[in-house]
Image 1 (cartoon, helix red, strand yellow):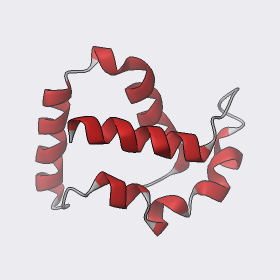
Image 2 (spheres, helix red, strand yellow; image 1 turned 45 degrees about the vertical axis):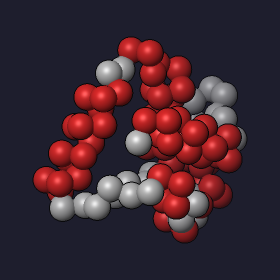
Image 3 (cartoon, one colour; image 1 turned 180 degrees about the vertical axis):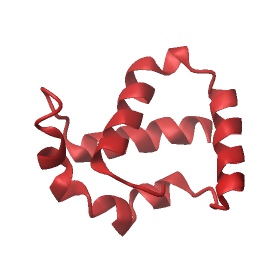
Image 4 (tube, helix red, strand yellow; image 1 turned 30 degrees about the vertical axis):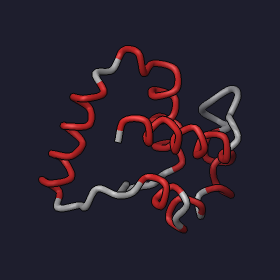
Length: 91
């Protein structure tokens, strides 16, 4: 939420999309909320956050930022749409 680097979106998407079954989502949510409290950051409405300028402004940099690190870079819109759906399912 604070950094909003293209690689951050990719990493979170990759873990949640392909490895969610390995994650205790209740514990993840609890840890996330505790970290927000500790950092004095308000937890956001994921739908609004993922449509914000902070996030959408990264779209043009997404491929360029990841193409040297990842073989098949997914489309930014697909990553954001997937994140919106996945995060909405347990937040």
